Image (cartoon, rainbow, N blue to C red; front, side, top):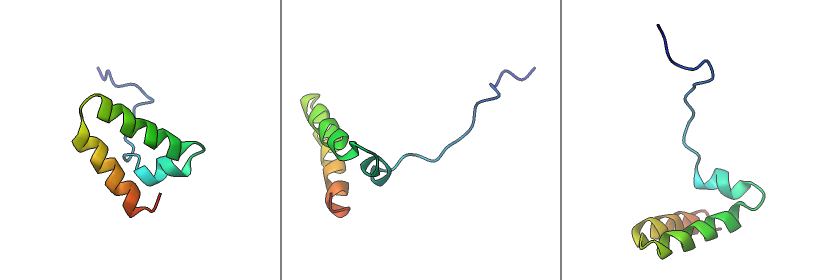
Length: 57
């Protein structure tokens, strides 16, 4: 018997550019950087900041 849901499907990962293109996306990215730093995850925050810089956001 197949237990997989009929709605299960694979999608590609959402990119930073995809998030930034949405309404409020840039603010959401800045908020996520703040949250990551508050949790001590500076490497993750820096990765997002670097990609934002590359995209000139």
